[in-house]
Image (cartoon, rainbow, N blue to C red; front, side, top):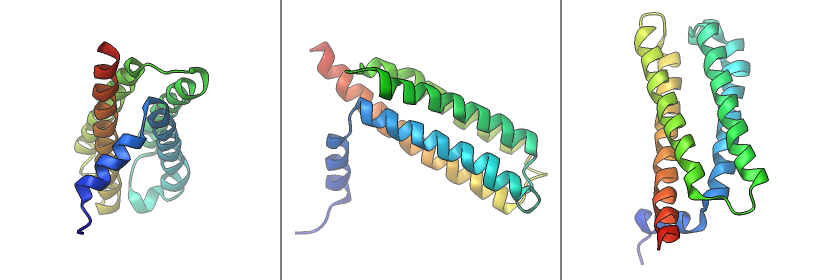
Length: 143
């Protein structure tokens, strides 16, 4: 039998729930803040990303992580409705990042642009999964 990527994705989606996705989101936001403030700030000259952009995006990511970890830790049964604010926040972060890249395009080198493009793509994937969970659990609640 051939291995199906769609079947694997569906199996993964069936194991994820709202609480788990908040943990994943929070850990992702912490990793983003780490990369922005530790790795990229140390190698600012190689990536040619201005420090003020790195710090601003890092503060935003840390704020998102606080929300996600709070939802993960302090709610026994988290309603999928708590996913909607983080979905919107993550999408806004993507657009903000894209705007900052476009605005600073002449200052950034290939590595800087590549980092932000990869980050946006990963975040878009997370937003997609969060939205699927939101719709799945929202439909099961409303029935």
